[in-house]
Image (cartoon, rainbow, N blue to C red; front, side, top):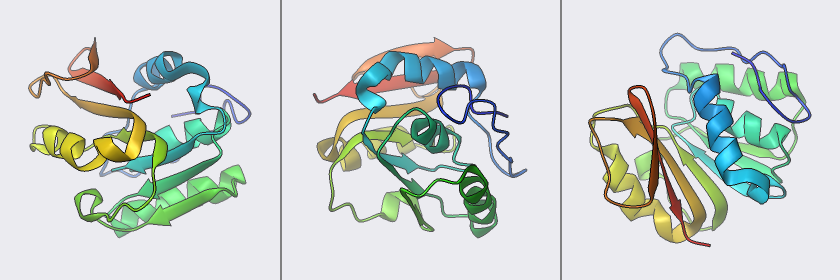
Length: 163
């Protein structure tokens, strides 16, 4: 998997075996939808796995990204990806995203939780008041009645705009 846009376009992202990465098509669509809002944005990447969404955000001009991942093995690969990219404006938090204590507001929050485990509505309730744009990737079996949703095969991406 590679970064598809911005200053680090083409950089190969290492993928831990135990994650379900966001496809290039879905990532490209997400960044097309949010557009220039990414420039200078403070980003929170929940359930980040390899960090593909957050790394893409940094490549496209985000000011900073906080990556949240609970699996220590996955976090080691994430940190390797960040270091290899040469990024400096980041923070990595090794914890369960749903236990994260949020004190700051963010311009954009990406959430890509495990599918079909009831996370989507809980994420909205917990994080929507801390963000301008909440982007949740989820299964077609977890439809939401809020925001704007786009479909990519078995994947839905829901955008909740609080601008």
